Image (tube, rainbow, N blue to C red):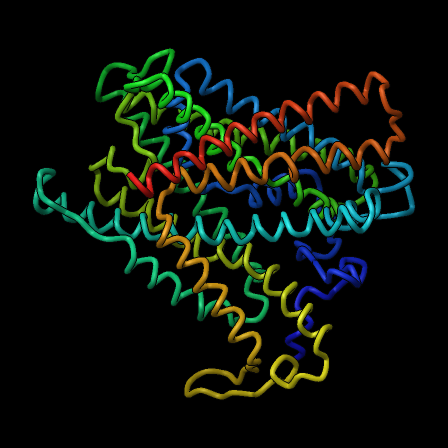
Length: 466
């Protein structure tokens, strides 16, 4: 088994200098717009839905829902721009095909921008590993607390630390990360879709049921009241970062588009598919965010399913958190395996004679099939998991970490690179009407990302040192 051939099915997806690749979702299998929409939906990060009730609470009944819709609209516009960059020179019939976001950045913007883009993508993947470690530990703790409250009453002291659960999650990921091509297993995306829909629907349902039980809609136009105006500003900024985390995946569009059948032109099919997917995703986001805020008002928890706004039915709360755990165990690998592939290729290219890097050993354990072990793979992947687990243990703050990651990556990946590629693809001249509109669009998204990043960093530091 050639273990170093991870994600090497298409040589056009590898840059000879950076070696960076994002795994293809599949070879061209003739998907239609429905399949493309489902694939895009699976690529969306539904972990972010858990923070949307809290974000809505910070922004209030007017700005909260409008901001969710605003980020959805920004993402949809950017996706339309990226869809037209799949083929060149003509977006519908061009003979040059860019099968990945990284390929497109290299083709339209050059190798320097490609390397910058690759670094940002790798950082976003690494950050997801940190965030998923935090969320998984919170969900395990929530299950234990839910059972404790059910048995001993809501006034019981049901306190559990995060660190031991993070360590257990890290140990699981150390083992799973050694499984070749785990992230490309067909069942993984199916399980992820089922789990994400399940906990999103449960969160929405519990929020709706609580509103009905309360017989009133809590919350206010201005959102949560704070002691000082400065605190309010910081929380609003942080909420922008949290919402941005839920809409960062413009970079997966071309990988999905490469699997679509043609005719009709792939860009047209993909645009139709993503409109449907964005509408469905945003509908669920609004339901979870608005009903969560309506249920709890100023007491809205940072994580809808682990912050203990909901106590009963305890088994349903447990099931929702179990769905989160299962989703994130696989999701961690989906975002980590591309980093593994990049690093291992880089070392192999730099040190082709090293036995530590290139030598594989066949191992056979009782009751298990034989497998090949590589020392670099074992050491690097283990160190990677240890590092994400360590950072999560140092900064175990769900909303703040999501805000930093969302704000840091939203503008460059979801707006800047799509706009710049589209300028080249469409041959848009400087200071034309289209150029001015798109530059204003990009600058507006940049401002949103900057204020979200500032607020999230402030929240992270305040949580750590207060």
